[in-house]
Amino acid sequence: MQIISIPITTWALLTQATPILVAATLFMFFMYKCLGVVATYHRILCHRVGKMNPLVQIICTALGFYGSLLSPVTWAGVHIDHHKYVDTDKDPHSATHLGWRGWFSILWKDSVDLRVMARLKRDSISNFFHEYYYSLLTLPLLLLFWPKIFLFFWFIPASMSLWSQHVSVYNHDETGAKEMPWWFGVLTMGEHHHKWHHDHPNDTSGEGWIHYITKALTYADSR
Ligand SMILES: [Zn+2]
Image 1: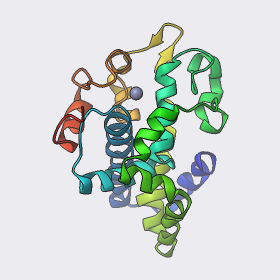
Image 2: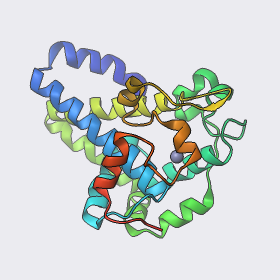
Image 3: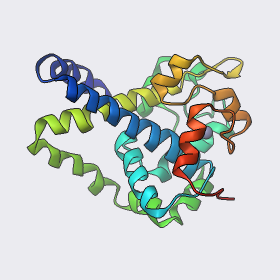
Image 4: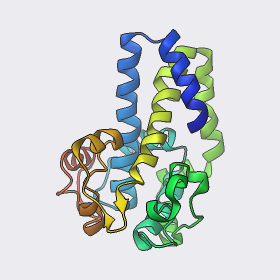
């Protein structure tokens, strides 16, 4: 999907787009990547920075699911191994070891943490998205009955979210996790305070605006 998104997005922007549809795409990119992947999958479900109301969790997990094409269980399994083996050859997506292959998760190291996966499988909402992964993955195809909705509300912003996730891999160098400039935070929807994140994976207080978004989605600490 990442590769085919380039010609399809170019064609759609040149021939189908209106200012409102472009604004809708950018808004949905924020919803899928920031609320879904960065805040919900990464900070709240994987690193347990807070508890969510069940309805908020269902909506935000769906955003993460359709913005990453992974269940929260699988996403967290890979991500915890990134923290555990960071910047070694066992890191699933070490930028220094993978080079250009970091841009494509299909070329990442096959490595998951079974403990975090077991924890999230005990959470009924996360487990639902894991157990019904393939059925849920087909749902966006229903939007093909409304091609512009399919393109500008899912396909293009979800593709942007996938590329954005892979940009996030490159906030490391040979010295480890890096603090990145503000524009990297815009591209990755909040993954720019990466050194802070690796030093304090369960505390978002040093992560700028993503801290406030994460707090807005949660009502209490989860520990
Ligand atoms: Zn993390």
